[in-house]
Image (cartoon, rainbow, N blue to C red; front, side, top):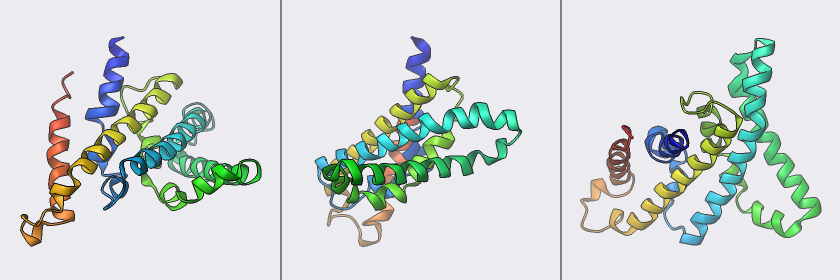
Length: 192
């Protein structure tokens, strides 16, 4: 149970992909998304993260070491992600047109997201990840952490764009300052 708890705390708080690497920052700090839009984006991205982690983990952990090709881990992650995106769009277009029309709106977000690649690569460097099941849990809870930070930024959006701020701090500068403060607050959970 303590291993599971440390995995959750690491994925959600201390190794938060958004705050430690700024991956997915463009999605989390978008100007005018609604609450539902944030949930939809995170859901679509989370499903891609889960699937790409499920496919790339066995290849990178078990197949590449057998062949002596561990250097290709990043390339394999990129190829798996691109293949899954292509398969998702092709299959939904053929069999589920309503789902395809929903996914079509998120094509740019999914395709250009470094967040998915970052989580896939982080699976192989995280100390808490020791097996296939823990890798999948780490991927899921990494997306929970991303959702939490996205909702924090969504709730602070009005204050971040306030007219009371000096003009030079409005927009990206104050957003990066807030991200740094939230990151320091999340790092307080490191000792757990």
